[in-house]
Length: 300
Length: 300
Ligand SMILES: NC(=O)c1ccc[n+]([C@@H]2O[C@H](COP(=O)([O-])OP(=O)(O)OC[C@H]3O[C@@H](n4cnc5c(N)ncnc54)[C@H](OP(=O)(O)O)[C@@H]3O)[C@@H](O)[C@H]2O)c1
Ligand SMILES: NC(=O)c1ccc[n+]([C@@H]2O[C@H](COP(=O)([O-])OP(=O)(O)OC[C@H]3O[C@@H](n4cnc5c(N)ncnc54)[C@H](OP(=O)(O)O)[C@@H]3O)[C@@H](O)[C@H]2O)c1
Image (cartoon, rainbow over all chains, first blue to last red; front, top):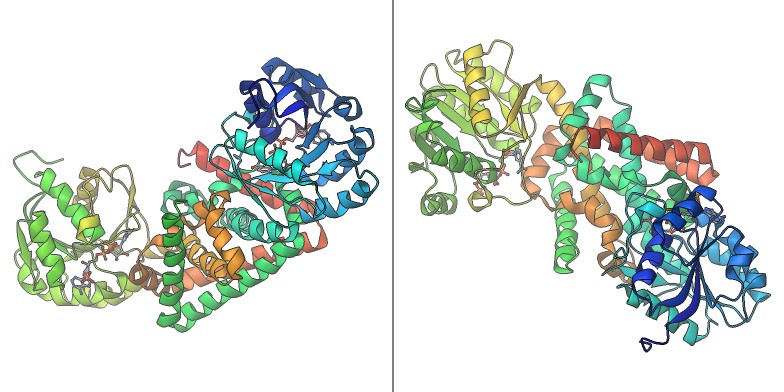
């Protein structure tokens, strides 16, 4: 960890100070060992005005090119579908030796789009990060300084990334309270498909299925939701743009997993149809065993 | 509500003092306006010994025939698959004018099996109840007196049930803190299929899907479960016998709903495959709208 007088970064730029970006800013504002100078940049005038009002950055910029000039670290915190475009804007003007990072929930498609740009800028280190933390709210008002406390942050740096850059981004997330792990983009996307993307897809879907029911039944879903439906759909409250981008960008891993899940659900349906008690009880037991592992892992 | 000196029932018998049954006993022990004399009956010697030790009943019986003789209310609290058999044992020896109730999570198959028995005992009122409350634990140690507080209890009495009997069972559940609603068995089973049975089936299933993944990914599911998987599978911790019985007994409503859900999930998969953003965003928006209704309904 650096001395109190030497911050980890001189100038840290957050592009897209929404839930995630404004949480980084808030934390860095509280702990000035993270960066001497904090810059927020957003395309939306309302977001910029709100960030200034909230006073969570030392400077607020509209133009990403102006924002990143001279910075030693730039973190892109916009929706997954816009990350590569922002990277293309800022890479040509970033200072040699600077670090470019982003916090998107999907990594492979972003890496595929950014890799050719990086080839033209070998003096910039690219260290993608995915903080496994969030709420169902978005925008600069939704952030808070402790969002990353005790949460995982997954890094997916390309193979040739200078270790010093990986160490600095690791230190950044550790200073914000997170535990850090490195993995490949492919592995990241597969893991997130099962732990997050498929559960969200199913939660959005069952809400729709419930909504299609006859009126009388539908209103009672709301009355009696405490019996399972409620917990099951809590995650269905999240932002449409973010989830559209996640589903489209992690298409391959997600659809493969959805096919497997549907086959498993159909097999369970078939066991119920034919009254195959051994299969039914076996599947319930496996579900319980996984839950028990979660509890032992202190995640429950 | 009755005067403090006149309990609602003279002798109340609980058959199967597990999670639900022992919670009724505990509440009735605390509030003696519910019944003067409390009898617990269970086939398992271990359960009987434990109920005696816990001191939550005035008498503990092994034989249901002996237990129910002279009682003015009998509540069957055994797994759904065993309810009709217990009803057949006790109906012939119950006192004329007494009330028979049960607390199973599925109603249609139980009613179909009990209705012919009732025809032979027109002097017994049958008032099935389903308290929409529970935990993932079972057995007499799992119960607690406040389990039904602020929860719904659904009654599904047959059409010809004397209103006085319905009123007494309603009063019982209200004295235990629940809100009561009456509905047909068919409607009950449809509502529970969507609010509880389908979410449980999907939660058990996704745990199995995760368990089938390559070792490396599977262990990380446990590490990163906080990103959605955990909430989604919380309900997958419940008892295998209970859920086997629920799935088999609510087969028709559940399988119809599972088919609809799978069709909806496949349509979402197809929209992701073809990049149909309007469909994807539309479905996410609907999911959020349902969640918002839940919050307005103060269930979230
Ligand atoms: N929320 C989570 O749970 C979570 C968790 C981990 C990672 N992530 C990832 O973090 C990223 C941000 O998510 P978030 O929840 O923080 O979103 P958010 O609250 O909506 O913030 C995104 C911000 O980026 C701005 N923006 C959009 N396009 C831009 C562009 N081209 N240039 C500059 N600014 C732009 C948005 O402005 P407008 O509002 O005007 O569009 C908004 O202020 C996403 O990639 C997401 O996948 C999210
Ligand atoms: N748990 C919930 O969330 C919930 C919610 C609402 C309604 N329900 C319904 O309530 C009922 C009981 O569930 P529970 O969770 O309380 O189960 P539980 O804790 O397992 O209790 C059931 C008890 O019944 C005993 N039993 C089984 N067969 C019997 C028989 N033929 N005669 C006498 N006793 C018998 C069991 O003994 P052994 O242990 O020896 O088998 C056990 O002590 C089920 O119909 C369930 O569908 C449950």
